[in-house]
Length: 356
Image (tube, rainbow, N blue to C red):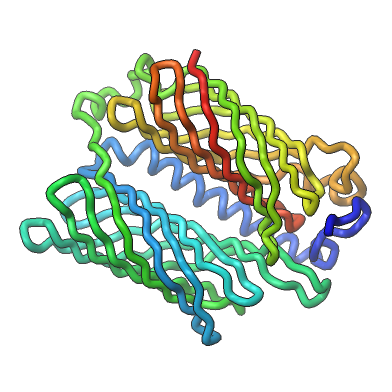
């Protein structure tokens, strides 16, 4: 059922000043972690020995209750030297009663290689920033809880003759503060992305003429999913302008429409700064973006009273593009809109872009 324009935000009006300050501090800490992640995308890969991207799936167990659910994970792994790696990963912890949680982690790994480096045994640890849609007894609805924890992992990787690899992993997520800890076991496949040529490593800042994109206009169509316990869905459309600032840095400005009756917002503007990494002669690229989202619906409750302070929300995105014909590309983007009025949303978009 759609929420009325005058209805208070779920849980938003019950927070005291102290909780609002704590939420603001968590949000600022999250921005710092995101900036570190983007720095690793841009600065570190020029020095690494190898880069892997993996997709994993499995099961998860919640420690405080006998509850199990599915789990899946995306990971970008950087081999720093013979003994140490760094990884950026997203972990979806499934759906257990009253909790729909996922999060991002930045981990440092140490590993040992066996059988002529075919088999790798590794242990990793790092911070974990979580997003949890959970019930709010004070309002009878839900809240979008954000915060920090830690993630500890053990991994076994088998490298095949080609660039493909097989992985088995277990993750321990520890949150504290009344939040549930979890243990997950996931397995999947990975692919070793090509390392950067030596010439590119030496002249990383001087390769503006070989930008992944110059100017790109992309039309998107996809789905928006409200991060509530019901996960209401709707159609999403977007138009994006992308401009390359440097070899590994893009800037975008976009309009986004979300057709979801459970959202107070529907039209919005986004702007983001992106760290991008090209592969395979610039035909394929991966990227991570960080920016702001501003709703453009002047007739909603977002523009009245104390809620004016909630107008600007954060947005973090991951994107991948494939240039199938010189002026044309296919692009998939996953946007996570982070609000402090309990309307976090995932927006999944696929589209076609034109370079000019």
